[in-house]
Image 1 (cartoon, rainbow, N blue to C red):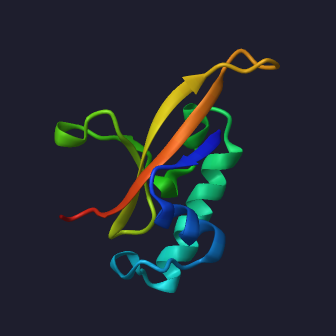
Image 2 (tube, rainbow, N blue to C red):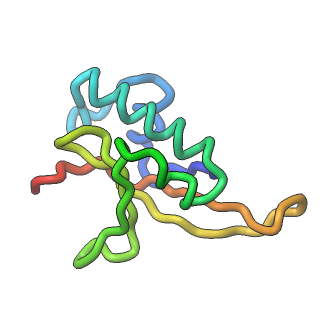
Amino acid sequence: MVINYDSEYLRELYEQGRCNDRKHRYQPAVVRNYQKCVKILSTVRRIEDLFPFNGLRYETLTGDKKGLSSVRIDDKYRLEFTISHGEATDEPFVTICTLTDITNHYR
């Protein structure tokens, strides 16, 4: 999948392992798991390829977050993203994943 970042802090967390924003500071284990999730998302070609990764617990969200999907970073946090399909010249379609937020699952 092609990964786009909705927020700059998500890009910084993935590329640098930290971000300058005080609001989005996470424990090192959470950042490592987030980077692992983004790597997995970037290697799969379509959303169905996430199903064998039971630890990610992929799900489509409902209610006020309808239209979003998520994978679990750990027991407390999840990575929310949207999926869309674009055009490509060499393939029939390209799946574009736009990362939107890291949220606390229990809030």
